[in-house]
Amino acid sequence: MAIESELCHCKSGRAFSICCEPFLDGTAIPDSAEQLMRSRYSAFVACDDTYLLATWHPKTRPSRVRFDEEQRWLGLRIKEAAPVAPHESEATVEFVARFKVAGKGHRLHEVSRFEKIAQRWYYLDGKHL
Image: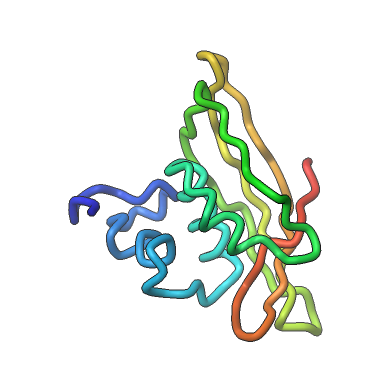
């Protein structure tokens, strides 16, 4: 259980216990593609493959998620989150995630696509920028 004052991995500025933790522990469902993006980032930080697979679109879901033991996530910045008109069941989120592998810094800049199926958002795929 997270300490109430522990800030969320997704850099929302909110406590983990009221931000992404309810999504990761299954007590809440993200209401938006941005919330899903933030919670998936937190799942990568926590190496929570169960959550990542459960929120991956069935058409693009891998059989498993691999984590690099030397990788350390440093931060997430959401640049833009928008529904794809005219469908409110599709959305994109542009983000930059920073991380280190074996002490060397990296950036992942991506526009991710999300689709809402039966009232749940799923990560479909992403385009690296």
